[in-house]
Amino acid sequence: MLIRSNMSTLEKQLHLGHLPPRPPMPGGLQSGSKMRMGPGRKRDFSPVPWSQYFESMEDVIVESETGKDIFRIYKSGSEGPVLLLLHGGGHSALSWAVFTTAIMSRIQCRVVAIDQRSHGETKVGNPEDLSAETMARDIGNVVEALYGDLLPPIMLIGHSMGGAIAVHIAAANLIPSLLGLCMIDVVEGTAMDALNSMQNFLRSRPKTFKSLENAIEWSVKSGQIRNLDSARVSMVGQVKQCEEAMTPEGPKAIVEGIIEEEEEDEDENEGQSITKRKKEDTETKKEQPFTWRIELSKTEKYWDGWFRGLSNLFLSCSIPKQLLLAGVDRLDKDLTIGQMQGKFQMQVLSECGHAVHEDAPDKVAEAVATFLVRHRFAEPVGGFQCMFPTC
Image (cartoon, rainbow, N blue to C red; front, side, top):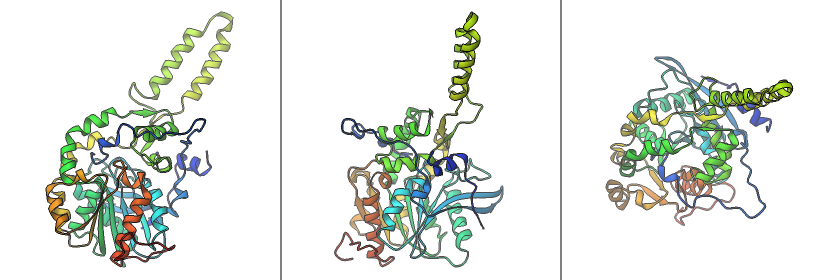
């Protein structure tokens, strides 16, 4: 069952123009990742709406033991196979925005990008349960709600945590019409090794941002997302406005600090006018800052379940498979052997951070389009030429 979503205040503002190693990888913060601009040029860190990249937005209602779970999805296209896109931990369906435009210009397909549970605008009865089994079942339920018994051919594409969930979905045969599987920059060995440093990485991130623009600027300058176009739409799904009541680091403390200044400045005859002016400033400063939509540090107990045994699970899937990596050093022993045996197609995309599909959406679209056309799962459009002559 589908309902058209009610847009949040933030979304309305956007439309008027006025959001573990592996997922996400600590490697995203790399030296030299800051973009340089020529003298006198200023980058625009203002957010852009989802509608610049997707054709529609819907909420899918799924009945669960805890009531009704509501999954936010973004869609484009009306013909061809469905590319079901699963984002990484802490991210949202909006991380696929720029990629969606790129892939739609190359092949005839439909795109469905999903905010997974506890991420983006999705609302579930039990947001604490982020086990691989539950998250995989979620996607199967969303597909059933969307298409019923008339399942279209579906290609699963997942980044980081989303790639791991995609493998669990394929292995459990939760989508009977599955054509193929694509994992983006997630490998069991590297992921398991990186889990030990994940909490340190999460602690190194800012807890709050004074504005959405500030969050976008941080994401680009830190190297978390190297593509400014993608960051301007993607960060809208990663952060949210803080609640009124917060810890001392939050907006309450900021406002209280300003109030204390007012009391110090109040003096004799000028006291009243100064106090009035300071109160006006306080009202302006009361605009709530932004914080992360999901506290990834609290999901630690599920990290092992996302990634342990992932390589063999991936290799055991009988459908055509693709692995896109930011570096060849990501490969572990099982995948190295499997790749030599031709069990999957692998491609390394250089000069990318962990958010490969955001940093280089055209390269990822090129690789995915080639894979789909090569297997005759999709038809090329716009004069698209495969990367391999055998296509």
